[in-house]
Length: 151
Image 1 (cartoon, rainbow, N blue to C red):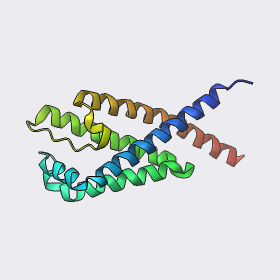
Image 2: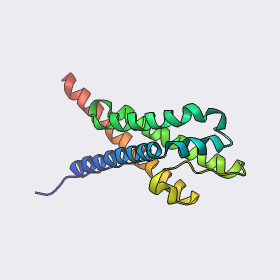
Image 3: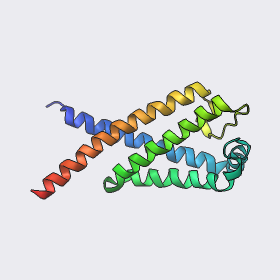
Image 4: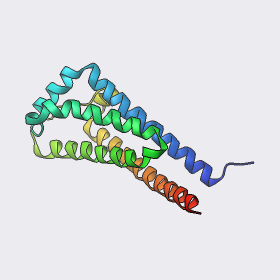
């Protein structure tokens, strides 16, 4: 008895969800462990320096909240949109910093700090693509559940 495409798709989306949770928890914990450096680097950003005091804790809280919401099926679609939105914001920030400023602070934590800017952009765009797939599949699953519930 082989796996159907439906099962493979479900396992892939579950893998994506696990990777999203892992990424945001890892990123948040890395920022928390070296919070002072993270906040200082945001303070050096030409775009965020005036807002570093609330952006630093805000990003960490949002990353952890999205990771938590991804765990539960009931909040997963909402969390997927949140994950995608945060990745778009991070990617947009990188593009703006690279193209329109002279000073490029790195406020990433852990392993991501080791990536060059091009690799970081590819990484982010890849995760954005996985999030879009997750949103499509999860949205379809939710519609099917609602339809089955109505019957």
